[in-house]
Image (cartoon, rainbow, N blue to C red; front, side, top):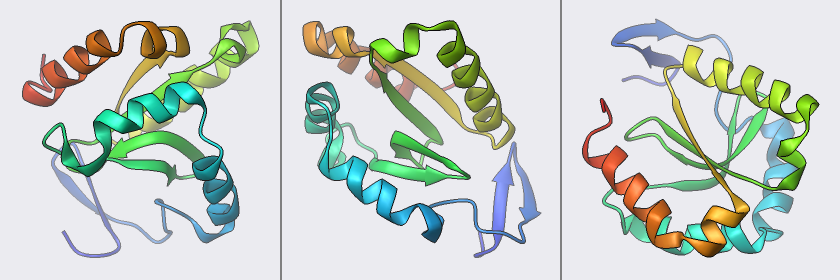
Length: 136
């Protein structure tokens, strides 16, 4: 795929604007990257250095969103949700965000802080199943 192209559901689309890691969000991405929550740090410890067989980036910009973790190889977004995601307003925003990701051909997996902190092995197993069979 050439620079300036996006592959969505097997179709190459020429893009006129940059979608990933826009420069206007660079400072925010850097701040989020240096101020990772404990659950994000724990999850990053099993994602970094291709430990799961694919490369993940942390605090990756997609459009005007900054996602916790992203693998371009398998078009997977991983979000670690804290308590603030439990409100009705936050859930509505998350749904809009997820729809935007789907429209870009990306799949999102969400885990709560509690899941990551209390069941990291279960999170690992879920990710491994998705990586091994993204169609399922």
